[in-house]
Image (cartoon, rainbow, N blue to C red; front, side, top):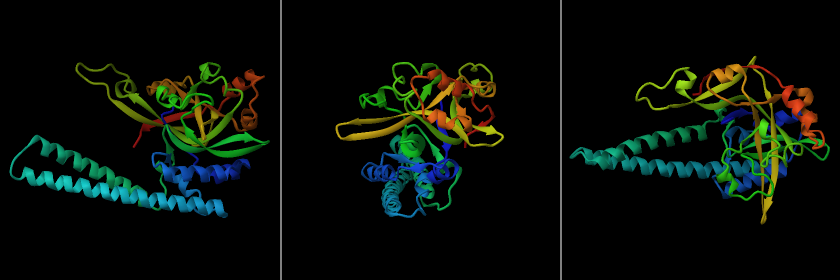
Length: 319
C-alpha cells in the first residue's frame, strides 16, 4: 500500500504541463473548512502554491492560510510554555527527591517540547523542502480529473469514501487510500472504476516494511518486529502519473471529494525491499483515455494500467 507520497502540490504545474483548469472555488472552500476544523490536513507546499496568484479567490486563500498559520503558531507557543513549565516543575522535585511521576513528567515534557519546536520551525520556515510536498492518508492534495470536456485540478482527500457510503466507512475501512488493481470490480470500487478516474503526480512514495524482512532474515530469538519506512524513487528521476479513482460524496448538506491510488503487484526491487504492493504510473500518452474512463470498455482501462511506465525504484530509509 502507498502509505505516503511526495507529490505535485502546485496546481500551476498541472496547468503548465497539461493545460488543466483549476476548480478554484473548491480550493477556497477547502481552506475555509480548514479554518473551522484544524484537523483537515493540507501540505505546506500546497499553501505556498497560492502565494502569487491573482484574483479575489487567490487573495482569499492567502488570507485563510495566514490566519490559520497564526492560530497554529499561537497554539504551539502556548503548548510549549505548558510543557516547559511541566519540565521545570519536574526538575525542581527531582532536586530533592526521586519520584516516578517526576521522572515521567521530565521525559514526556522534554520529548513534547522538542516536537513542538520542530513544528514551530517548520511553520516559520519560508523556504520549501521535499517534506513540505509529502502527503499521508487523510491529507488533501490536487488531483487532475476530466470534467465538462477538459482536464480540471480539484482538491481531494487521500482516503476515498465512495458516494452513497456511510461516513463511518472512514474508520471501518481505514485502508481506502489505496485500491487494489485485482479488486477494482469488487463491491467497494466498482462504482468508481470505469467512471471517475484521476491522476496524482508524484516523484516518490513511501512504504512501511518490517526491518527483518527488508534485511532478508528471520527474527532473532527474543527480537521484536520493528517497522521502518522506506522511500522509493524512480530511476532515472521522473514525475510519475499515478492512476487513481475518486468520488464525490454528499449527505445532509456535507460534501467530500476523495481519492485512492491504484496499486498492483510490486516489481522485483520493491518486493526485495520487503513490500508487497506498488503504485501504477501510467504513460503520458494514455492520460486522457484514462481520465475519460468508460464503464463499457473496462478492458481498455486494464490495458492502460498494464501498459504502465516501468522505472527502477531505488529505495532508502526515509528521514
